[in-house]
Image (tube, rainbow, N blue to C red):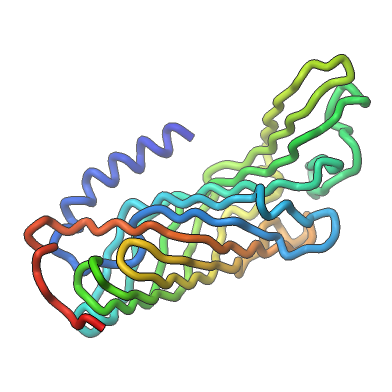
Length: 244
């Protein structure tokens, strides 16, 4: 994961210069959200402990009508964590992935699993129809809707708990099939807010796993966002736009 963050830092250093004096878009910043799989069977997740965190480091708004309406794109990185019921363990075979009762992957059959989590990471590129009342972020109301495409970076599964002898364990498992997760991810997104703060929601248009390997799971994310305006200090002082 560290190498991906280094790549993003280098990209952010280069893109910050390019972003100056452009119209403020509704992408760069950080997104914090909770997730649900929308399932009621063993794939039902613990929403409060399932998170989606995005670090969006570059944005560009192609204006359609001044600062009010435009198409926004950019670059970001997204980390998803699905926390499942402790009584289930994720199993991956050559053809499928499933949640099984008990702990068949542990050597100690009496071990107690206290955390069962699937972790996924994606590079993301948005395409949003972006409406803003001002050129700059300050005192600007915004509304953006569209799609966000992603390509998977990694997939791992983490189990934490206690063995029968009292020793704790923390196992992170990888799989050469990436637990049959889809390489590509596409989600519909809506973002709305005022100034630097806002809320957002997204719905997966693609299945989390390959359709022949697991049930259809289309995660739903809802949370809040903190936006960053890459404008120079001079452009921030411009009084452009309509103050609704």
